[in-house]
Image 1 (cartoon, one colour):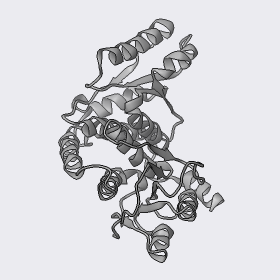
Image 2: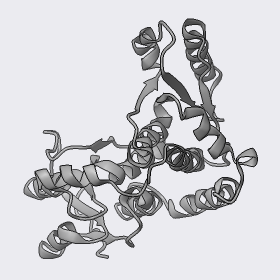
Image 3: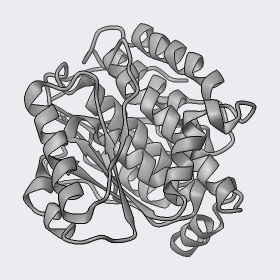
Length: 310
């Protein structure tokens, strides 16, 4: 690990990454949206937006350190004299950091990039603290991790279906394709679930955000179909936000006779309100894979794609 040295005022934050690595940045932004005093965005591309300059903190996220798009983005950040930081298990990304004497944080290898989410969130928290952009965040990460740990015993495979809500939820999805909806500030949960359905369950899926979907996508639900709407709920919803979610649900039900499936995992903290439903839905995607008779672990097509662009 090499610490970050701040020698200028930071005016914006760019998290760069793709796939499972980038989800950590979505979690961070959804968690801290009301606390960060400067703009923060996630760039899922090999190119940096034009506004990125020497006052930008660029955090490159690549579990493997070999992701072509992230390596390209990191090099572009260096060429623009940004404050560039990397988070990875190793690979060429960390090699670049060492070569150019730039700061980085190396995380422990996990089973796969998607299973390293919690490490990545912790690492991003450390970077923001060291950059002077937040107070101490790790205690909040630790508290959320404790909540997730408590949930684990409810969803493990040793619990039979009668007492395992993750298995029950997966069974509800086995015959239809899921369409996932969430409020903007719960968007990381919806995106993560969509991605886990793709990677673990090996099925197409999509997600969208409310209230925007109520102004366009709602028109696609005119008649019964082979889709199942999934609504990511938040125990901290305002009265207006609950009205948005309930109105969307009732409109779909009236038009299609389809009952949306709600996901509501209560938490004591804002970060827990994101990580706890993510944890639950990760299990759902794995049990759905088992119901479909597929192994959730290998990602052969992702590897083929990555090889084709490397």
